[in-house]
Amino acid sequence: MGREIKPLTEASWEDFALLCRAMGSNRSCWCLWWREDGNRGQGTARSRALQLVRTSVHPIGALTYEGTQPFGWVAVSPRSEYIRLNRARDTAPVDPLEGVWAVPCFFVLPSFRGKGVTRQLLAAAIAIARAHGADTVEGVPGDPATKQRTPAASYTGTVTLFTGAGFREVARRTKSGRVIMHLELGQPQGDAPEPG
Image 1 (cartoon, helix red, strand yellow):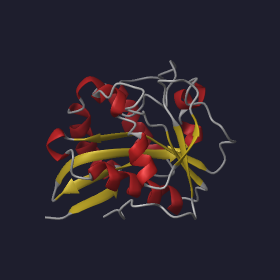
Image 2 (cartoon, helix red, strand yellow):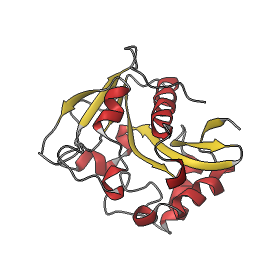
Image 3 (spheres, one colour):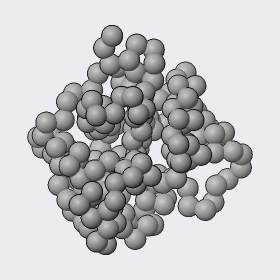
C-alpha cells in the first residue's frame, strides 16, 4: 500500500488522537504547545485541539497514512497563530508575520522512523502553506551539533531536514537553542519529495 498525506479535519480527528496518545513525553501537548502561552482557556488540551480543528479557517496540519493506518503528523499554520513561538527568546520572529507560515512540529510512530517520512511531511506542509497564500515557510529546528538530540528536543525537526528542503538559516540567537530557517516560496525546494 502507498503512503498518503491528508490535512487534518474533523473527520480524521480520531486518527490524530491515536497519534497523540503515542507521543510519549509529549502526549499531553495535542500540538497546542506553541499555540498557547500560559492562557490555556477552558477544557482539556484534547477538547481545545478539537475545537481548533472545528473552527480554523485553514488546515492546522496533516496526517500521513499507510492504507488506513495513521503514522505521522506535521503541524503547519500561519506563524501569527503560534503565541509561544512568537514570544520565546530563540524563536521570536525575525520579520513581520504577514505571509509567514510555520512548521513547528512533527511526529512519526517509531516503527516508521528512518524511512523519509519526516521529509515527506515537510514537503506536504510546504504545499499546504503555498496553497493558502504563504510567502515564506519557517521552521524552528534543533541542531544536533549544538543540542542533544532527544525525542523531546527533536519534535521540531533538524537543521539538516530543513536544509535538504531548501530552507536557509536566518537566525540563531543562542548557542544551543532552536534555529530559525526560512524557505521563500517561488525558490527551488531542494530534494524535498512531493506529498502524496
